[in-house]
Length: 257
Image 1 (cartoon, rainbow, N blue to C red):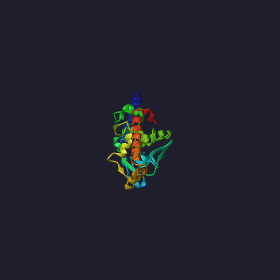
Image 2 (cartoon, rainbow, N blue to C red; image 1 turned 180 degrees about the vertical axis):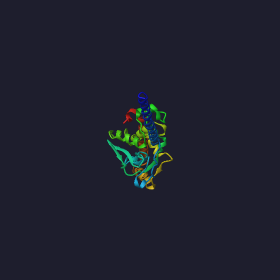
Image 3 (cartoon, rainbow, N blue to C red; image 1 turned 180 degrees about the horizontal axis):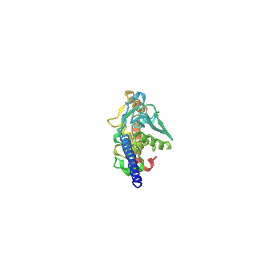
Image 4 (cartoon, rainbow, N blue to C red; image 1 turned 90 degrees about the vertical axis):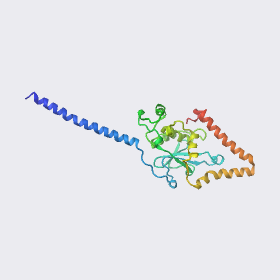
C-alpha cells in the first residue's frame, strides 16, 4: 500500500498538470487566430468629405503658387490616413498632418488598400518582391506605412527638383508595394492623380483655381510679348519633364532623398 500510494499520487498529479497546458495551447491558438484576423481584415473607411478636408486613403493634389501658373501639371501632393487626415511633406524637416499646405485639395483619387502588401513577417508577403520589400522597409497597415515614411521625412531637406511631396508619397507607396510595384516615383505619382480616370475634382471651383492663373498668364503674355511667350511656357514645361525623366531613369541616386 505504501508503494502504490505515491505512484497513484504521481499519476494523478501528472494527469492534472496536463489539462492546463492543453487549455493554454487552445488559448494561444485562438489568440493567434484572432490576431491574424486583425492583421488581414481592413477596417471600413468613412465617407469622403471634401468640405471637411477628409479623404480616407486618398492621394490628393493641389496647384503650387507661381510654379503651377507656368506649368499647370506641377503641383503639391499628399496621402491621407484611414481617418481622412492629409499627410504631406511641405518643407525641410516638415511633414504636415491634417493641415494640407498650399490651400485645400483640388483633385483626389482613392487608393485600394487591397492592392498593398502588409506582411507581419517574411513568409506573409503577398507581393513578388519579398526580400527587396523587406530590405527597403515594410508596414503592417496603411497608417503604419504613412507613419513610418513621416518619421523618415521629418529629417529630410526639401527640394522642388529632387526631394519633394511626390517623393514622400512615392516612398509610402513603395513601402506598401502598392499595386505590386516598388517603382513609384515623382512622375507616376503625378500621373496617378492627374490622368487616372478614377480621379475626381473636388468641385468646379477647384478646376478654375488650377487652370485660371495659367490661362490668364498665357493670355497676358501673348498680348504683351506675342506667341513667343507661349513657346517659352511650352519650353519651360518640356524642360521640367525632361529633367524629371532624366533624374528618375538616369540619375536615380540624385533622387534618393
